[in-house]
Length: 596
Image (cartoon, rainbow, N blue to C red; front, top):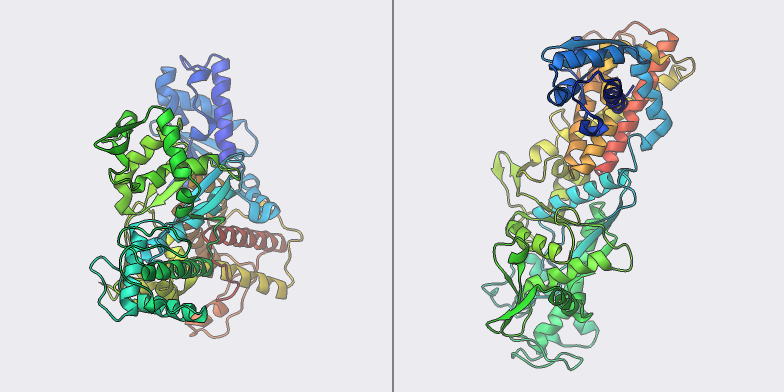
């Protein structure tokens, strides 16, 4: 019996006690949903397989002492199938011990479901637009964006495992002042001049400038001979903006797609595939900015003051009103934000029921205005729009922060990190920490093959389970004759309980937008499995060298050969662990090797 099944049973018992008039002043409408009845693993295994505080939750509503209400629950639970015994402890905890066959039933459940074990459809029918990374196309993806790539893609996978339709989206900021600074930096580099004060530095600027010149030459354009004076018009006759020139426009036109291609390549190599690459500039060229402003004006949320156009965001909880068209006629950056949210919610293909924004720590001040805009459109902040703020990443080596990028100057890029420790270690290490917390990446640790390396520890558990399969096949051990009720040792029970907790953990990770919980679960499961492996046997081994150590350690361990039914059951347990670890690693975008 799983924790979810016990929660359902406790929920049903609560309703039965109410209907029979045994629950004091408790009424059916006061009973929380089934999922609110927590079933947890006791720290002391002597207290049973599972414990619930349901009686303590309901005692005040029932007007009863928690222990008295717990005794009523215990009496009903004792009569349930698959439960061996029930004990009331402390102020009203209900401790439950399952019979061995029921506890071990999870093994067959896992093996029958395979990689779908734990997946559910409770988010089905909803389209979640998940926007993450969205770095400016003015340089390589730095370590902060790399963290969002790992967390965002893992979150998308977890949400899909909970039945949601997820649209992975990258917002490509190809409009605005940052692109102007990028173009100015390239022109300066092409002429061997110093980088402008507000420009971008790094060897990649020289690389891109050279590529622009080579590409232009191949097209018969001598880009360096184009006018550098301000003003003028582009190739279509449209006037260039203030401070622009024909030469700068040519660099911009050619360089931005180059950076776009490089970012797409980096994401693909990092195992992140976006469904939509959205160009900010299209919001202006397609008239969506003007339409969004018109919509808010029709709702009474736009006013004019001091020659500028304002969004009256204070009506919707913001701390101040926001300019969206400046007095000089240029759009403020927030104008695009308004249009972009409206686009997400009302586009023809996969309109978003929920728009999830994953933003860096420097965007914390944006939350108020964004939520105000959401409400102004008639939506529910926190429901139709959700904003997640990620914290900083520090890359460490030998206890000191490192700046190891020769190409991008004084930052660490996604390619720097994966070149140093690989994609698996990079993704896992960035996804395993709550994005609300800063994270230190230890290059020495993550490039090592030791049990202190979290990703190695988990991957090794999978590789070890595969090795058990190979040894079992060589010994002729199969599932035939397996009796899972024989999985009755303490070590067996710990692994069974860990497997049983996966469905609830996966659902919780989706609801809380917390993929790091998957990593923590995998590490706990791996630890439980390694302990089990050290005390229980599927295939017995003979002593070959009493002094052998290290790599030979597994080859010298002695254990009494289990009876065939138990050996077959342990093989199934081993394979259930292998299945769940592989599934969990896949949700984090990490490989599950069969040898290490």
